[in-house]
Length: 474
Image 1 (cartoon, helix red, strand yellow):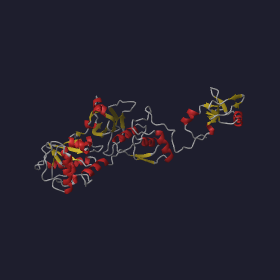
Image 2 (cartoon, rainbow, N blue to C red):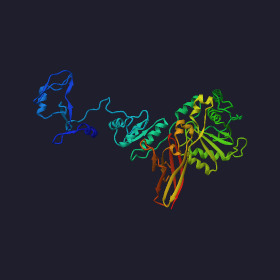
Image 3 (cartoon, one colour):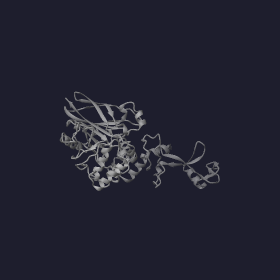
Image 4 (cartoon, helix red, strand yellow):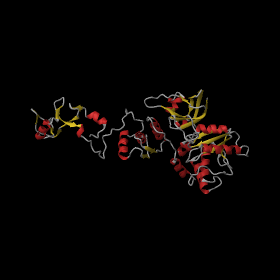
């Protein structure tokens, strides 16, 4: 019985004998000169530069068996029957799988994308259903997508945000895809930068409490490289100007943010325009737990001397923010009656040329607005506005956006969140074939009550913005 793929059979074994046996016609010519041969009553010369592959005795035998037929052009060919062919051994050079061409349906416009047929062959040859597949450099997510379709478990990794975003969206497009989690496990580039610029920096989650006795005034421009070197030397010498490498890192960012360092706190590091400033750690995102600590310390700081805040507000600077944090933490801060802003630390701070030129800009995180309507036990959500920080978006992309909804690549809803992991129960997203995006979603609840609904928006850059709304149905 043939082991060939159905697609190959349908495309190559297109002929049938009266008894239903499938076959294909195979050429019996080879390069090189040779004599004429008789095919029944016909004496046929091979075309110039070729010869008949079989001798006369073999041809006579095949003619008796009915194994030689003639093409429309009258050229003899041998019948190769499907039921006699068991397929070929796969060699270690695979040139039978075409690359992903520009018109391929699986194409996701990722530079290093591999064809799914390639990973399909690899996974089928090396694993069984239920096995765990690991891809440490996922790129466009081909391995994970194929593993999911073949009912394998999978773990996939990448350092690039665009790669993770591309892979996540690709997986969501698979019908019946099983739930999966996206986790952020390391910030190696920033850790290397911190180790190089601030030698000896601790990798602990927070800067130490306390500060220099003579805090400098806020700079009128970002520190030059000589300023940064001074901070590093002070840190290495353990002088009062900076008590530790960790303090040097914190003060470096405070200067770039035009904030004055403050002392006597653990979670509050600076003061700018009367608002307190928190500087997030290099190797971890700002979390809702951090926000609770910042809020608690801020309340204690009110009216406490020269470094006390003059306004009811905190600017939280972070390299990254936990996927569930942005809108959730805003609500958490609002519940504590604190005006809290979440500010992304730009990657430009790692570029000494940008620092020296003063071309460093801090921008607030994206903000999401959701309208909620309830009719009996059915709740309807509608995205009404979404704004993302413009510093992450190239100028040509900003110019192309005519409506705020164009920033949204896909969004998802957890209709009854229990305070645990986000459960993707509904989603809408753009595809290469369909660029439209619905902005409304409805859900009918089986029982009356109050539900916490979590809305997660993924923007065109792959960033998450999450908002929690309360819904009461009767």
